[in-house]
Image (cartoon, rainbow, N blue to C red; front, side, top):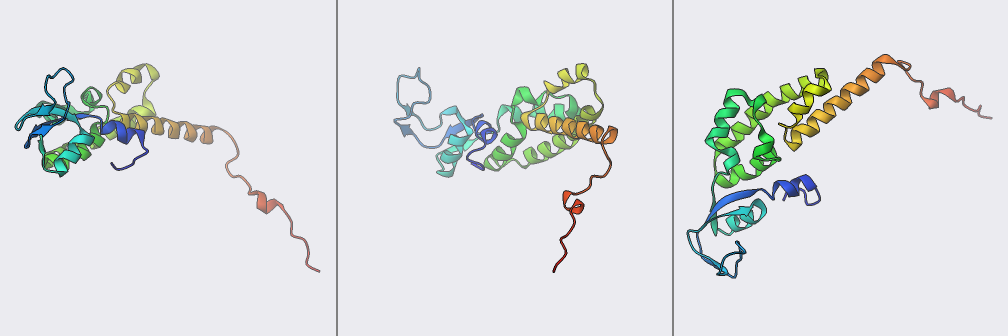
Length: 185
């Protein structure tokens, strides 16, 4: 876990990943409706990332590529990354991708994340600086948590710039400069 107290990091690690058990495990309840308290060798289940990481380090499981990084998603991103609804795939798409890529050993996930972020970054900043509220509401539903934070920061930056440009003195005098020194006796 990169940051123990960061809620976004915690939620990113709650995403489920498909795994295959290499060893049988007794006393484990993965499915509450199951009659047995064990997992057989070769069983395919979905576990939260935080648990899958620990079991992977103990060489008890192998992790498969999650559905949000499927071939279909990759093709959609290659076609037009700005229009893909990444939020429906994973609200923490980028953070989750960075955490899962080394575990599955798929180098193309890193390339996918970088290319998607580059293209979407330009679109997010353009919309934040120029779009009207009615057009942005639909656009905001497509953004991941990280992209939403970026969009809000860009809008706040633009608002501060406009406020600075429209009013107030251009230069402010430091309060230290207004005071006179006392003469030394």
